[in-house]
Length: 132
Image (cartoon, rainbow, N blue to C red; front, side, top):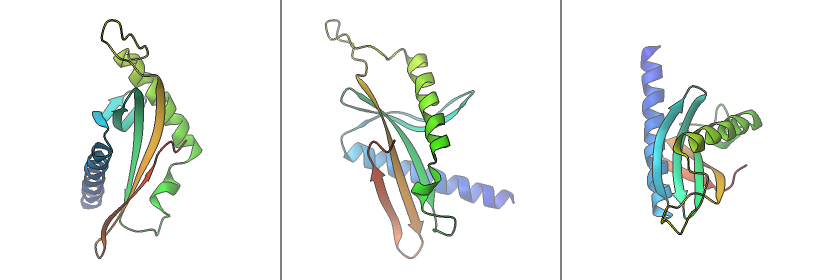
């Protein structure tokens, strides 16, 4: 059982690294990875201009339990919204003040990166901007 958990964790780390690289190629700045608080974890927090991007990453080896995107349920989306509020509160990043040179966020967006990593094909990335 421990081998299965470590293999799953390794797959998750691989997917998060691939997702972070993908977001960076789109011009985003990664602010945090695997940010945790008492309520849970955000996979990736990024900045896209003045938009804070909360990105959920789902990586799977196959579709036997469904496509990776299918695992982002309305319940999961609600939890990610709560975690985004916690992140913003902790980082006091809810305002924009260009006169002093400090920039906050004018919007928050929730994206999903779904990675299907089949051994025979290698990884495929599906990116959903503004998923919910």
